[in-house]
Image (cartoon, rainbow, N blue to C red; front, side, top):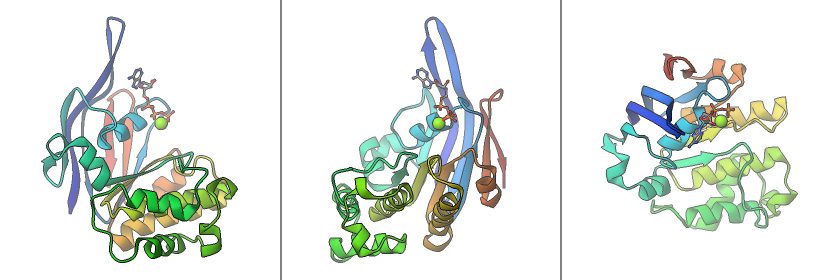
Length: 226
Ligand SMILES: Nc1ncnc2c1ncn2[C@@H]1O[C@H](COP(=O)(O)OP(=O)(O)OP(=O)(O)O)[C@@H](O)[C@H]1O
Ligand SMILES: [Mg+2]
């Protein structure tokens, strides 16, 4: 099912008198249950694209539709609280809190229904991504990079959002840990029916994806490989 649709997106910024176009007439659609890899040279606009579809920034023209409805009409903040989750290269967890507390904080922000006891659900989600109870009760600054990224993925799951976006989620991890994190994210698409959108420079990740969106620097739009 199509959950997110991007139509004729244009994004530019003003450089003195010059208009610098980053994304031009970009079209794409994203379904639940699929893993998408966004590739492209450094500076091609991948992070910009993610910031537009996560409504952290707004395009000059074009539409972003969540389940057929313009996110402008849903309300940007509401869309962010309830329908998307982000995973970052540097994890972006609250360092002085435990892993479990980080997951609980995020549950407190969404309007989505969370089944059962929140604390138990938080531990369960962490366990699902390979964080045991003892580790879940440690402060985040005492966790390894891989453990922090697992925690960030549990946090992304905690709001029950349909879409999970990640900007170079394995950029700070070693090869083996990267593989484990990507397998986890792929599982979320294939086993939990999430729409997972990952920006990466890693071609081995791209090779395992359901769909590759290659951001072409000249065209300033995607070439899509299914
Ligand atoms: N508001 C803005 N003002 C100035 N420059 C901007 C603005 N928004 C984007 N850019 C520029 O747009 C280009 C695309 O940036 P973006 O961060 O999206 O690239 P990227 O594909 O994510 O690159 P990387 O792979 O290095 O992370 C860059 O040259 C960036 O400096
Ligand atoms: Mg980037």
